[in-house]
Image 1 (spheres, rainbow, N blue to C red):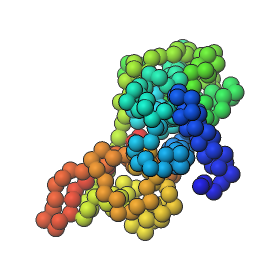
Image 2 (cartoon, rainbow, N blue to C red):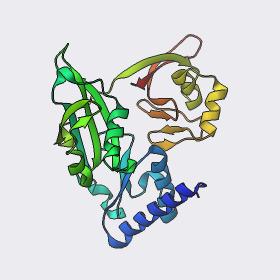
Image 3 (cartoon, helix red, strand yellow):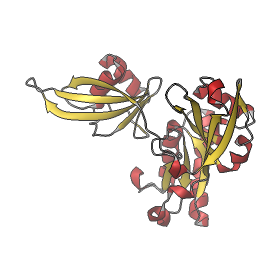
Length: 269
């Protein structure tokens, strides 16, 4: 059972949503939740389905694109698990671009988030916010993509200014967002691809500090909290480290004469 009062309230909410889905035979949805809260939802459902493995719980998370951190949870009857579709989620994506690129400021994630919340939206009604430069070389400008609950879409579409930049908005289909994630490559060597060893390479810290982060519940692998320092990582595993960022594990498979594996970790930037 979660310790903080806030987590206890959220835990009960997740359990109620799971019960509603089961009793009524329908799919029900949460607001946007963090990676930590996704783990809390799994714990709540595990109480309702004590004999079900965590990977088989009737729960699915989606944030509007494949690698989203903030996601909406779908609670469903067990018999619906083979009928899941991303298109069922009440999620919209709003593209926000300057009216005139020439006068567009270098807007950041914080600028978009602050402006949208200033319109009256709560944080749990907003998902990830992606920002990238668009336009021809020498005349590009910052463009933001804000994921939100569909019932908040019309409010965000009214937005016409961020800081001193006049902007235009449009709702785009989720399948038309082609987001190319950028990475910084970090290389190193480990005796075995255990979590604690790979973590030391990724965040450039001592094994002792890495172990503390693991014990404190600050490490998530593919969205699940992991407190097992000896867990072996697999190619493509996504590691989220609270306070440091997100990383993708790439194992080269090349072993040195000294028996160490050369690995690559991609840091999300």
